[in-house]
Amino acid sequence: MEPLVVRLRNRGWRLTAQRRVIVETMTGDHVHLAADEVFERARAVLPEVSLATVYNTLNELVDMGELLEITHVDGRRRFDPNTAHRHQHLVCVDCGRMLDVVGDEPGLPDEQRHGFELLDVEVTFRARCPDCIGAVRA
Image (cartoon, rainbow, N blue to C red; front, side, top):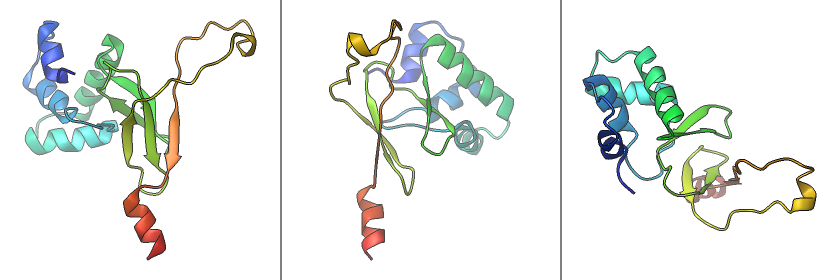
């Protein structure tokens, strides 16, 4: 999968210094950041970036289909740059760590759709990560 900054450059999206630093915080595997986390990381690199710019940029990227907006088990909005592959999420119920997982998408039989047109499926596996399992057993 191409990094988000490359995808945006290929689309001709204007990458200002503020947008670039925001986009660069969304780079990597298993990235699922809330807006305030993006803001903190972006500000560490570019102190003049504003929270409003972070929100506006994230929302624009969601509207463009370049970020997925997901709801974490803690109820907070998170942003996921992995838009190239359909995937589910594995979340630790103790520390909140979230990972992308690829597997068979769950189906909904026609007789269970009740006439609805299925648009999307979001699956979250709730679990306990190895670090938290160790902490519980200690």
